[in-house]
Image 1: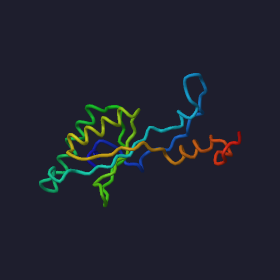
Image 2 (image 1 turned 90 degrees about the vertical axis):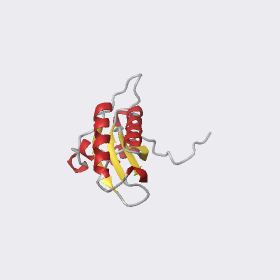
Image 3 (image 1 turned 180 degrees about the vertical axis):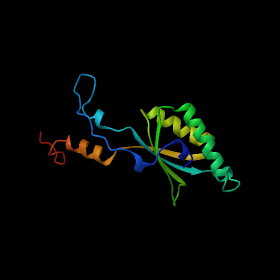
Image 4 (image 1 turned 45 degrees about the vertical axis):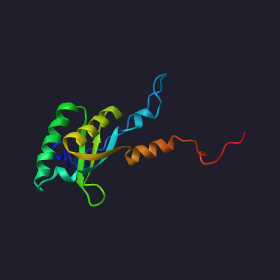
Length: 142
């Protein structure tokens, strides 16, 4: 939510066909199936909020920092949630290092605690599972 103005709504994301995996000496065939998607849970520090409108100020400040320091990150969606955290954000980043920059900026400029998890879109997960051997659940006999 802190970076809502930075990105797009999930419902506006276009579904794209997955490319055929390329096999070469330097690339595992499943690597191209993995979408660099990250989920971030954020809990704003109580001392960061003096009034409800303080959230808008924090959001603008964090969004400015993300635009400046993470131009390769694409914001997908943001949600305010009820529970142990205040917000859930979904974004794409080219690698874990970029996702870490996002988390550090949100923690620093948003005065918040955050956790970031890599995620796979459901169809990508199913594609990974389809690449597994049929008898993967059975122990191999020696």
